Structure formats: structure tokens, C-alpha cells
Length: 220
Image (cartoon, rainbow, N blue to C red):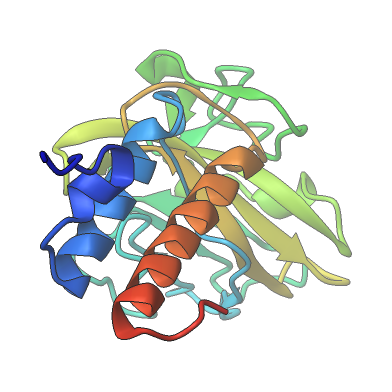
């Protein structure tokens, strides 16, 4: 009598060790995710922007930050400590920060869902000549658009950075950021679809259940 062969997920995992099971399951889940789900989101962060000329440098791909430039840094917001409402934007290239007006003076803070894309004439490095502190909303998060070179993929990406300000423009920190890693436009404030996370969690549950059965223990 012939023995029925396993099908579906079981056929993928037959004879595989725990590491192979995990890799195969997660690959299957990621492959099933929507093709447009390419937004890389930092999640909540708290990156202080010191009130001085150095400010903070941030690599949007690696998440590395500091008062000195980490490798491949992308943005550098700072105040120069010049005034209570001083706030300036610097970048690794002359086309870093998004101004939908197409004017180097701004405005730079964006309304939620603003489309961040376009030619180089809408992206600037305003530097110390433009005090963005007069444009921001105090005691609130503000969204800024960016364009940068993704060193891991050697292409241009569009993204947004949320900077939360206190009672003055010199009291602020980066509280989240996101970017599209395939070079597509992005909407200010948008984050990955909840369905993507649900699929990943479902995949991890499958891995946990199979691994538990292989150990002969009940899954949690």
C-alpha cells in the first residue's frame, strides 16, 4: 500500500530542522505579503536633538544616530543654539528636505498624507540660512519629508520624519520615521499596513506550533 505524501506546509517542513522550518515559514509569509508593502517603519523612537550646532545625525536605513556623523548618515536637524525658536535642517545632499512649495524657504512641516515625491526642485538643504523653527507647531509632532540614497540598495528613497517639539523649537526629538525602500513615493505619516503584521504573527504562530509538535510539547 502506498503511503500518502504530505502536502502544503507539511511537505515543506518534512525532514527539516527547526532553523529550516523557521526560515521556510517566514519566507512563505513574506512572499504572501502584498507586493506594495515595502514601507520601512522605525516604530516609536526617542532620538534627542541637542540644542547646539551639531544637532543629531541619523542614518535612516541603519537607525544609527549621534552628534557625530555615523556611516551613511542621511539627515542632520540642529539649532546652533542661536535662539529659543531656532531650528535648521541639514542633509547629506543638497536635495534632502521636501518643500512642497518648491521654495527653499519652505514651508517644511507637512500635513498628514502629503505626497512626498517629485523632482529635485522640491527638495533642498536649507541649512542655517532658513530658520524652520518659525514654521513648526509647538507642543506637537511635526512631519517632514526627505529624499535620500539608500546605501543598502544604491537607489533613491522617499520618506518622512516625525519630530516632536516642546514649548520652544529648541526642545525637540525625532519620534518616528519611515521610507519606501523601492523608490516609490510615500505619504507623510503613513505606516505599514496592519495586515502585514498580522501575516507575520500568523507565520510565527505556525512555526511555534510545528516546533512544539516536533518536541512533543503542546503549542502555547
